[in-house]
Image (cartoon, rainbow, N blue to C red):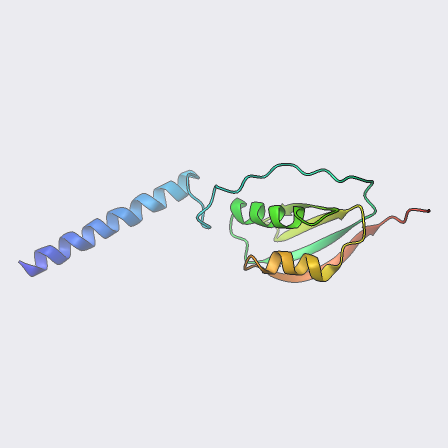
Length: 126
């Protein structure tokens, strides 16, 4: 009798796991319990004066990229384009952005910033 109860419990647990896997493969569920992140396109107030290329590890899905974009976009004067498959982000800015602020905004989410390099810089004349 006890064996039958254990078999039923294991069977039920397997059904829940299978259902969750099917949702993930259909794209209805992401690895980061997400889909809730809204991604409004942010526009910079001034002309772009430069951009950083940021290498990021730990992204597994589009929701990871959306979370990072939302966090970086919350920095005044910065806007990000994040590619989770490539493991990178291009951050454009219209005013000076300290690299440590950028690094902190990403790492507080649980991702690792591998490197930040200046992709391009344009200087404005006063």
